[in-house]
Each structure stands twice: as structure tokens, then as C-alpha cells.
Length: 621
Ligand SMILES: *[C@@H]1O[C@H](CO)[C@@H](O)[C@H](O)[C@H]1NC(C)=O
Ligand SMILES: *[C@@H]1O[C@H](CO)[C@@H](O)[C@H](O)[C@H]1NC(C)=O
Ligand SMILES: *[C@@H]1O[C@H](CO)[C@@H](O)[C@H](O)[C@H]1NC(C)=O
Ligand SMILES: *[C@@H]1O[C@H](CO)[C@@H](O)[C@H](O)[C@H]1NC(C)=O
Ligand SMILES: *[C@@H]1O[C@H](CO)[C@@H](O)[C@H](O)[C@H]1NC(C)=O
Image 1 (cartoon, rainbow, N blue to C red):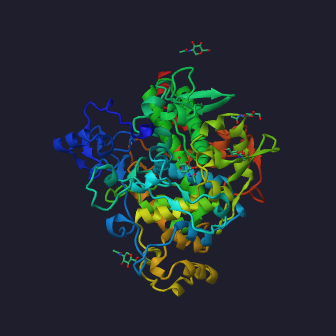
Image 2: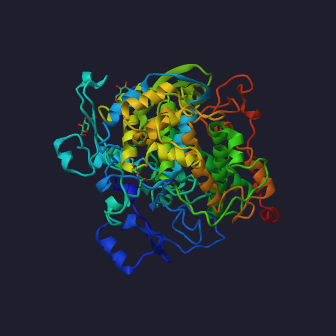
Image 3: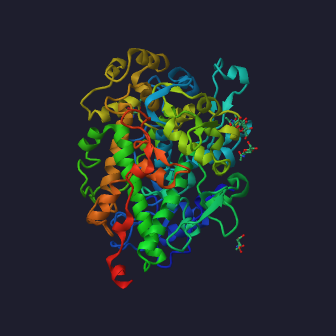
């Protein structure tokens, strides 16, 4: 039923080239036949049209690197910052003394405390935007395996299914000794190996279902081929439907609603996103923003056809998003000076050309994993306010997971748009909200501990010991051999906690170490998260031929246009398309306060699209 995540579109590809998605080289006739016979061609093969170096960036991500045209596409393999470290049969690595690690839940119980706390500087917009950013380059499809295809991992039948990797509950668990629950469902990450594209005795490599670069693929190419269903093919627009006066993404024909239908039951949301609340909320806004841009461009340039309007609007929308992500969001999270020093952002507002064709597009498994650290920053009870800032209600955000259609009802989007810029994020420390630790997926499971799953997933990804990541992150200038070597990273009591559960430093798992670290000075992340994110962003910026700051990319912005893009902010986006927003603080990721007080939208800088008025159409009309 959930196969739509893999629906493959052969229709477009009259002159298509077929590559082996794993190896990134042309596929042989023999390979093609073999994969088709096993019914896995849609994963193991990549189809795309021959590259044209002057065209717009493609929605499927192909031809970003002209020498390696598949590397930007969905269904391509992920990189690793450090080589995998498994025990035999690609099972989780053993401890130094040769034993299995203890239950992940056991470690989670000791290392993270369940409770609530407030961040004094940041708003909940941070956690939701992080979800949105992550959805651009990854997908939560693993959840579907244990919810839908293999839902029996905690039952006797699960014991014999190699996909099942449930998390057992320790005796005397402080919560579940009262609930009687002894096991939480979970499955192994899907890989090119488990799918059958590559020999099963090679190191598991995760299949990424999103395009490799940051290109709003959660809006423009949510599932392979879906853009054909979500484009209106009129005025450059994306399809929408109207529910209770709100405009929502659609893949439906006229007069049928799709956003609203429960994905589980109808499969109708095949081509419209339905994931976690944060990503869906932002997808709705960015979707609307696309149409706002397209409509404005169409008025300015009556001669432009649908294709030109669509591509130009998409290009502006992506650049607008990247400007917010790199110059607003990450400058707060990683520190602006740090990002300039690392060469991830420029230090002035001019064009720059970070592109290096020798740096290949790719995502590290560690980067996707690092996003999970942000679970502890999430306040799972979101307060909603009306237009006049009156408190309305509190929603449990886990109740929206995979049920995003509920956003369309009862002015929920308006309540959230006002809530996320007012409410504080949860404390960035070792507390985790009870809904995430005890409920996890709302009504979809009786109980699920997201944080235990985070730790446990790391085992099945085969990550090297935490200490090896510290060696890497310090450029091998600091040795991490015994627990005392962590003194510069965490409080003594945190080291003691790690020592209680891990006998040797080399046994400490990546996420467990990260949970124990202090935040980095001048940033809002622990040093190892900083290291992993920076490692990825450097590659993402340098490997993207269509990077928006390049003056020499295909269809590059003019200076006047680029000047407009630099005005992008989340406040500007919400003023343009946020539900009922007429005033907001200029820096939405930061809490309202001195220097960041609410002001009318007319005072928030916005893009002036007249910079895109075509001088040729001027002379014609
Ligand atoms: C894998 O991790 C173990 C510690 O669990 C370490 O002793 C071993 O050297 C590591 N192997 C590789 C190839 O890094
Ligand atoms: C959609 O609804 C409108 C107004 O109710 C109606 O005029 C139109 O014919 C409908 N379109 C289709 C394809 O049913
Ligand atoms: C909307 O609110 C009404 C009244 O509170 C409630 O009965 C209804 O179930 C809500 N709808 C949804 C989809 O939450
Ligand atoms: C979340 O959903 C459950 C039912 O699955 C319901 O009992 C609970 O009240 C909901 N929580 C909130 C805060 O809406
Ligand atoms: C695990 O999945 C089974 C089958 O769907 C379900 O009955 C059970 O409640 C789930 N376990 C938990 C703890 O949610």
C-alpha cells in the first residue's frame, strides 16, 4: 500500500539514459533485465534525460554534476564521514570485551531525563524548520516499514524476520513497569543491500529517497515523478485546494480533495507530502509562496509561458529558502562567525562562487542522523494563538505525525503560525519531552520512544565509536582513549553517567556521547553536531552547480535580482503567506524581546519581484 514512495515514472523519458543508481554508471542490458525481473528497477536504476549544461536545475536532481549525472538524484547511495563499524553479519558492533551492548532503552533512561524545559533565546520555529530542512535531503520512510509493512516486530512472528530490530524494555523501567509494555516496534534501515540492488555481503548503504542537494525537493519532487501531478501546468503554478479558506498543497483533479484525505486509508496523498508537523507546516507556506511568485511574475511578464514561469518561480523560491536556511537559521544555530570562517557563507552581500566540480554531491549518513539530536529541542506541546495573540489551545504535535491533513481544520495553521514565533523552544539540554519519550507517534503506536530509537538506529547504521568521531572532529590533534579525555567536552557528572553504562570509552555510541556534551560556545549545538553539520554544509555548497550565490550558473540572477534574494527572512515568508500574520518579530527563530519586538509586516523587508520584469517583454507590450 505504501509503495507509492517508490512509484517510478518512465513516462517522461523518451531519450532517457539508464544508470545503475548505486554505482552511478550506465547500466548494462543484463542489469536492467535482472532488476526488472526482481521488480526492483525503480530503486536500482536511475532514468534521466541526457544532460544539458545550460538548463535550469532539474527537479529530479540529475545532471547537477555533469561528470556524475546521477549523484544529485533520489535513490542514490549515501556517504559516510567515517567507515562503518559493524560486528559480523552487519549486526551492531560489540563492546571492547566482546559482549553485546545493553538495551538502548536502558542507556536512554540514564542519559536523558524526561521532562520539560525552556530555551531562553530560541522559539519553537527552530525545531520545525530543522524538520523541514531535513525533509529536503532525507525521508522518514523507515517509519512506514514498522507501521505498515512489518508491523509485527514485537510479536513472535517478528523473531524470524531479519528486518525486525525492536527495542526491548528493561525490567524495572521507570515507566513501563506500570504499563506492561515490554517491547517497542522498530525495523532495520532499508538499504541497497536489503533491497537486492547490491550483494548482501557488502556494507549496508542507505537509500536516500530525496534529491541530494538542498533544492526544496520536499515541495517539488516529493516522490519520484510527482511533480507531474502537482504542477497545474498553467501560469507556472502548483496545484492547490481550498479548505476552510486556507490554501493547501494538492495533487488532486478539480473539486476532489486530497490534502484532507487520511493517507493511511486512501493513499490519496501519494503526491502531496504527509510527514511530520514541522515539515508539513513549512511545505504549505513554501508551496503558497511558489504560487505567489508565479502569479506576480506572470503579471510582470505576460509573454512568459508556463514552463518559464514555473522554472523562474521555483528558482526564486529555492534561493529564498537557502538564504533563510544559511544566513538566518544556521547563523543562529552554528554561529555566524563560525560559518564565515568555515567558508559556508560569504561575509558580504555580493555574489560568490563556491562551486568546485571535483567536490561530488553527496549526503553523509551522519548528517541525517545528527538531525535527530534536535528531538531534545522540541517542545512537543505547541501552543496556538489567534490573530490578536490570544491563547486558543495546545496541540500535541505527535498527533499530527503522518496525519497532516488535520492542519487544514479549525484554523490550526493560523494557530501554529502565531504559536511558533511566540513560544520558546524546549531547553537544549538533557531533558526530553514526555510525549517524545513515552508516546512518540501519537495514536499510531501504543508507545514509542523516539530517543531510544535514535540511539538504536545508530547501531544499525554501523557508526564508529564516538571517540573516533571526536578524533576526526579535532582533526586528530586530540586523542580520545580514556574517559578523562572527554573533560573538555562535558561536565564530570556526564562523564560519570557514560561510565556507568559503558565500560570503556571505545564502547560509547555516537549519539550517547553527543547527548552528554555541553553546547559549543557561540553556537546552539554540541561540538560533534557542529562538526557533522559543517562537514555536510561545506560539501553541499561546493558541490551544487546551481548554487544560488553563483553569478555564473545557468540562468543566474542579475545583480538587482540577487539584491532582492538577500532580503529573504522567515518573517518575510510568514508575512507573505503565513495564516493571518500581520505583525511579527524580524527574527522569528529568536524569541520576542528587546531588539526583536513585533512590528507590522509593512516594516519587514520583502522581495520586490519587479527585478524579474523582462526588458524584452517590456518593449513588446
Ligand atoms: C570498530 O570498533 C571497535 C570498538 O568497538 C574498535 O576496536 C575497532 O578498531 C573498530 N574497527 C574499525 C575498523 O574501526
Ligand atoms: C468544480 O466545481 C465548480 C464549482 O462548484 C464547478 O463549476 C465545476 O464545474 C467543477 N468542476 C468539475 C471538473 O467538476
Ligand atoms: C474542530 O473543532 C470542533 C469543535 O471543537 C471539533 O468538534 C472537531 O472535531 C475539530 N476538527 C478537527 C479535524 O480537529
Ligand atoms: C492526541 O491524540 C490522542 C488520541 O490518539 C488523544 O487522546 C489526545 O487527547 C490528543 N492530545 C491532544 C493534546 O490533543
Ligand atoms: C507494535 O505493533 C503491534 C502491531 O501493530 C501493536 O499491536 C503494538 O501495540 C505495537 N506496540 C507498541 C508498544 O506500540
